[in-house]
Length: 81
Image (tube, rainbow, N blue to C red; front, side):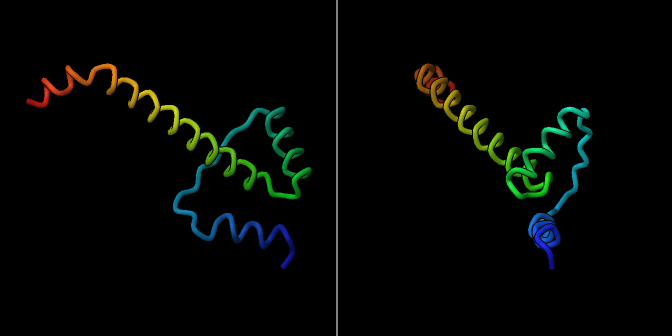
């Protein structure tokens, strides 16, 4: 089993849903170049990027929600009564 076959098995072993992406040629080329530099498949780089984006956005949204809850604690308390 070569590296690409092993990586593809890792990538799709637990896959629940496939999400085809249409990338502009320049973006696809950049993705392929980065994957090559990292000795990974483009799909692995894309999955890693999606995971990081979701983690970062989730942290941002939680931070905003916490700030809003703190700023409006009195109102939220009154609404809960």
